[in-house]
Image (cartoon, rainbow, N blue to C red):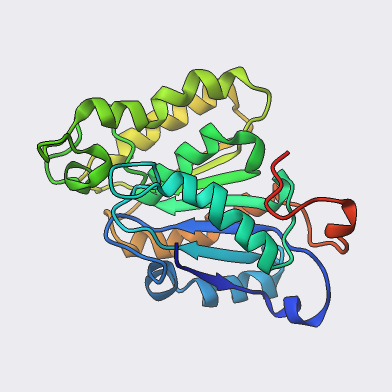
Length: 262
């Protein structure tokens, strides 16, 4: 799984260990998408310099057409947790406990971020989903989900059963039955033609009923595009980093192996 890494300026000046934000791309994207279209380096530099967020590592993995699940083409979920996260822990000075890990994504990556937060709440301190493609009703005919390998039957047709099996509602009972709550920051454009504003609001209402102090929703002007995502990832980062551990020294001396999951 290829990836790009953002390192804060302070990383090379000391020996502190840092929290990590994993940014997931959408359908048709790759590991370069957030950097090229979301200008993450410039945004992170500015937010850190102003004190709006902690100095942090940002990892942008690439796994096109995967929707971040274990599907017919890619075992993206397994690769993310079993390969990517441990490798990042070995190559960089990362905080390996829950407070050192954040996940966010856009569109299909928002779908992935919601799933990861609900399936692995003990591993993620906070999550953000921008225009998440989390359809609980009809999947729009022009949604990329209808053509992606994880959701196709052996004849290449969209498999609604596969979609329902993998989508976040299948994880709700498990998520709410365990003690850890993941703070969610949700964003959608008000003119998103994929109907994502209503789907995002539905998820927010479910969270609001069970974790009212740990859910935020923003319905903003715009559609399903980079004007919305680039303009709102900064606020999402500020929300998530409120729940992250601060950079600190001697993570490995605490006896935590790389890729450790409490």
